[in-house]
Length: 420
Ligand SMILES: Cc1cc2nc3c(=O)[nH]c(=O)nc-3n(C[C@H](O)[C@H](O)[C@H](O)COP(=O)(O)OP(=O)(O)OC[C@H]3O[C@@H](n4cnc5c(N)ncnc54)[C@H](O)[C@@H]3O)c2cc1C
Image 1 (cartoon, rainbow, N blue to C red):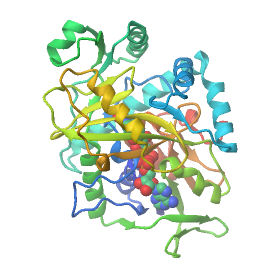
Image 2 (cartoon, rainbow, N blue to C red; image 1 turned 30 degrees about the vertical axis):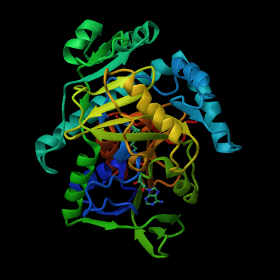
Image 3 (cartoon, helix red, strand yellow; image 1 turned 180 degrees about the horizontal axis):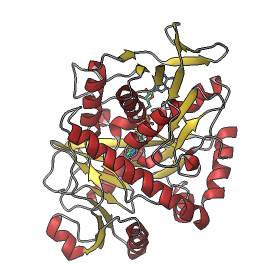
Image 4 (cartoon, rainbow, N blue to C red; image 1 turned 180 degrees about the vertical axis):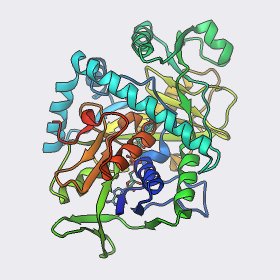
């Protein structure tokens, strides 16, 4: 069987990885392959700019009453971490309606076990990839994740989440200010404490992506086409793809893994899903001894990722359509809020030209899309939202099973495309 994978983010690379392991011939279409000569250059794309957390702890879906309420409050503030650009878009209106409809406790109760299960499964697969040594060694630090809070209200909310997470074996501990200071000595006096999740792992996305690229490129059954796919034609025995270079390619089956841009191609294949792009930014500074642990600064929703030589600060959720424009005000808000959680930290000397953004693919119910489209030859893997990095291997392995018409290890039914 010959399969096309369209899109070279974590979803596309992991799908290709599992297809190759199943003996399938794979052609991957991706116009933005990282530049091998200049490894320091970070390409745009959510899979390169994310915080690198594997997050079994993030069990609450985006569509939840508390996120909905805080989102409503924040969306009119110019520097807030959440923003919706008002647009006259039928898709956005339909997405917003379904997001509001799912922002209730009944949906949260339904989604929590599904989110926990796919995250824990994916963490096992990351471990399997690491121990197989197929792509080589990569950062996999299982020191957990600190959810740092400054207000009692936010701390209580996180504690409640940690109690629910414990039902799935996700271990955590409450650290009040003094206990937190012992492991994070530069924590700001205004911080009340943190919930430390032991389940979470920190990886380095650029490192993992480049090692996975190298593994795929060396595989004899793999071929890269450095072009954008413009259209899908289903009116033949084989599926035909047309790229921006005007060339046509034929395949038995196709996986659409184009992240937030999946709908454009899916529409050309006669189907569509409810999907919005949630833009986030990442700033990098040289390594600072002010930060030891990966953390999420809960009030400002900023993720702090200490990698080997650098520290990455990432955040914001901006629903402003498909574009890679950088909003400087929101970027400086990320830097300013990080400085308010660590004493003596200075993020503001970062260079704006080094800021990168990526689009999180968001479904309205906070669950990914993995499954066949109206035409069963076209399979979709997107909608990972804030956990798209964590679930990359699981979603890739499940997509492979769908393409090969095999049984998946966990149920696909919460992730089907036509659920709205
Ligand atoms: C700031 C930030 C922090 C985050 N932190 C985390 C985290 O800590 N943990 C976590 O689990 N998740 C995190 N996420 C979410 C996660 O990064 C995304 O959900 C995930 O990377 C999405 O991967 P993807 O492969 O589906 O999409 P993408 O990474 O966006 O890749 C899609 C690819 O498709 C290509 N493409 C698009 N159209 C076409 C076309 N027509 N033809 C060919 N190719 C095409 C694009 O060039 C792109 O390379 C974060 C996201 C952001 C923005």
